[in-house]
Every structure is written in C-alpha cells, then in structure tokens.
Amino acid sequence: MKKVAIICAAGKQGKLLVNEAVSRGYEVTGFIRGSDKVENAKANTVVKDLFDLTREDLIGFDVVIDAFGAWTPETLPLHKTSLAHLCDILSGTKVRLLVVGGAGSLYVSPEHTVQVKDLESFPDVFKPLANNMGEALAELRKRFDVQWTYLSPAGDFVADGERTGEYLLGGEEYFVNEKGESRISYADYAIAMIDEIENANNIQKRFSVIGK
Image (cartoon, rainbow, N blue to C red; front, side, top):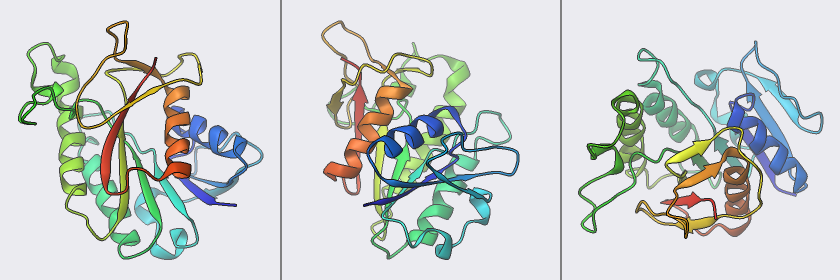
C-alpha cells in the first residue's frame, strides 16, 4: 500500500485529492495548519505549516502532493518559496513530489515561446498569479535532484464541477476537447493526479489535463 502525503489537505483541491486517494486504498496523511481540518475520517492528520515541514516529516512517504495555493498580492510569491522548500527537503530521496499547477504557463506556440498568460485575452486579474506559478515551475524544472511531476489543469478550472470520471491528457501545450473547451472540475483533476501516482508516466515532467 502506497503512503501518500497531501500538503494543504483542507483546501478545496486538497480535500478532493484526499478523498480520491483514500478511495483507492492508499494510506493518506493530510498536512494542515492549526485552524484547518482534514474532513475524511479515513485519512491521518498532521497539524504543521508547510514551511515548518522537515525531511523527517516526509521521508516515510512514497508520494507527496503539493496542493498549496496563494491568492493575495502579498502571498503570491509563496508559490515559489513553498515549492523550493519542499524540493529542498525531498532532495536526493525517492519520494515523488506531485504539484497542483496552473494553466497560465502552458504554451500556445509550437516553439514554446508564448504562454497562455502572454495572450491579450488573458485576464489581467489573473496575471500576477500566473506569473508567480510560472516562475515556480521554471525553478522546478532545474531540480534534477527531486522526483517531481507538475500537472497543469484546463484553462477553466471549476471548483464545484461534476465528477465525470473522464479526462484527456496533454503535454506542455494548451489544448481543447471536441467541444472546443478547455475545462475540468477539481474532482476530475484529482482523478488524473491520483492516476499519475499509479502510472508514473511523468517523472520530472509537466503534463496537462482537461475534461472530455
């Protein structure tokens, strides 16, 4: 049985990742801050801030899923520093680090020179978030000492969307389904993430997922 740690397990995506991993029979531990809670009774709970985590906290797991999210102007840089911290404490180990990523850094040019966030149609309100997450990914790509995987969602990432159980996988490029949509629910994203634990197809790679 694989042992899975989920960082920020009380967030909207974190909760669904916990539930999906538990449903597959994994031994799941949710790491949360003091004011939060892991709602799934079948998951273990550790109350400890991400930045206080040590190598000893995570070394016993097969997989660590980073579901950290920051949304305010003051906290956006934490996307980079939090991921760097997790990489540092997992450096040189066999523990896999799976990262809940963003769509803004997906490429829209064959040469991989233009990203979604560079388009004029990309909303200004989301650019600071996309830029910070993109910078975090750029730093992650330099970490050959960590068994990382980065999963970018669809452009329309729907927190309360339906769990259909179906999805389409892509690579580094932005893509759409047969309906011309780039959309996925948090629930279907969680399925794709846990499937990656089982398939291990994207070690030290970024890949992407959209709904059918």
